[in-house]
Image (spheres, helix red, strand yellow):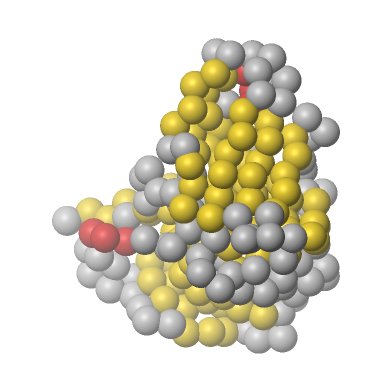
Length: 112
Length: 113
C-alpha cells in the first residue's frame, strides 16, 4: 500500500519555542488526516485532525496545515513545553475508513 | 486515560503458541480497531470492527483473527506465533465507523521467545 512518511525523525526545540513537525503522504485520495502523540509506554493520543477539504485547523496550542498540492501535512505546536516531548505520528485515512496509514513518527525533544 | 482498556498488559509466550488479546472500548463507542506496533514496521493497521461486524482489513496475517462480541468488547487471536510477532498491540475505539477520532488503549506488549 501507499505510505505516509516524515521528513525529520528527530526534532529538538527549546522550551517556549514553536515546533513544526512535517509529514508527506502519497495517497492523493485520502480524505482525512490525524496527528497523534505517543508518550513512552503509552498508546497514541489524538491531538488534532483535518479533512481533505480544509487547509488549516487550529486547536489549543496546535495547528495542522494541509497542502494537497504537494501532499504535505504539518503540525505546529506553539510555545513548546516539556510535556510535549513525545513521538508524533501523522496518519491518513483512505477510502472513508477502509485503511489507516501511519507515518514512522518524529521524536520531539524539548530542551530546558 | 482514554477509557479504552486492554488486557493483559504484558504477555510472554513461545513460538508456535496461540494467545488472545482483549480490548474493551470506551462506553458508547461502536468501533474497535486493532494495530500492531513494532520497531521495524511502525504502527500497522490490522482490522476494524463496527457493531459486531468486520468493517475493514489491513495488514493482518492469516494466522491472526479478531472478533467483536455483542457487548462490543473485542478479542485479537494470534496463532502459530513467530518471533517476528513480538510487538505492541493496540486497540482503539471510536463512536462510529468512519475511523475518525480514535481513542487508543494502553497496549499489550507481546514477547515471543
